[in-house]
Length: 386
Length: 199
Image (cartoon, rainbow over all chains, first blue to last red; front, side):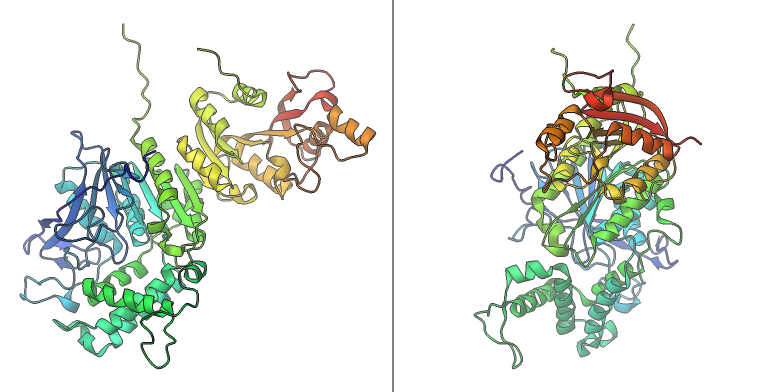
């Protein structure tokens, strides 16, 4: 195993753009609605093998983007999964060709509600059609075709990225050798929907939201509150107690009723940072897609996995209360019933849902070895040469 | 190359499992046996294990494994999902032994059960001469700090199977250094049973 010092960054990487669909040949959404043009922002790390067999599609969560590893020119912020992607890391860019794209409905380069509607020349805002997790996967499939990848070695993601991974398994089982699905659910529970609805209400109650037509003056307060709620659910009681305790922050009190606790300051900081990079309408569209998602599609879950050849690595975290490990266990049980080849591990982490970004050592161990197994060519019986 | 020296119970299990069989190992630990079955028998292997560290070791060996306790590990599997279900040195540690064994017989065509013989000569003499709960290489735990919940002899298991109409298809008795033939309930440290539920 490489030590920390030997693990290198993928270095400076450009975000690239792929365009498809046309008003006369639109992209059809699962709902039947159409998009006349789609742009996909994506990044790649490593080199695609000549036979195109070493590609891994990394799938981001609710507020992630195409920038998964390394650095963009003139930006000091590493990619959101930089600890996991790079030379010698879990997703080893010297062995695999790793692709990450921003999801449909996003605001980080891929077409979404803040994009310009070619029909009107103005932002879509709420004219943007409602999208689904399977639409996101369909857009990724177009990108994979464009990159000349026939069969992915793996799809991998946590949280909403895990949902996309599951959707890939259901939709294109013969186009992937494996799926790494972390801290997610086959469908949202009422609790998960409830947290998202409170986030959406915070945005929509902000007077600046203006029915989504806030060009230039976004509902920053509402979006920040949505993000604050999100961050509470991403941590655990134990990780909050350890990180903040009841310590008072130097910055002091923000309002009369605040004691200036560090946890308050942290949430405000996360909220205000978030509004600099995220579009409020995208938040509404994407959370709606997550809440609507149901992998089982009215069937029994194990029927979705029946006959599946792709191998699965399922990982949950004990302290995750947003996506409780029980939801991952339910997926594992469906794999058993379907006879699918799967590994399920529940990591004893205190980080809560954030663990999928923070439990680097444990996840790296599991993912590295799992990918080694997947990459190994299937054993072939060869007749003795004469 | 020197021949691999295998644990005697693994040798027996390798003999019993044919090439290409599907195998579920309940309480597979670090996956040593499963890896052996994949390597030497081309088995389609699945493990169930409760220890997180052991899971990591299984994954490093390229095994597929579920992180669960044995008592809940079998629910979800369809009938006769595996050619063999293995309960080697784990039966004595499950809470609901009856349920687990019935479930194993439902999920597997055949079940391999291996456990330390509580009626082994050495254990008997410790009880008889010292008046103490035995501590032996096969039963290495003190009475107050043991994962073992059930203490059974080979004869106990045979009568258990008879009472529940479980068919005993093969047996192997393992002593301290070699296989035991005579008086197994006295001389065998470990008993291995290949059992099935007649249709």
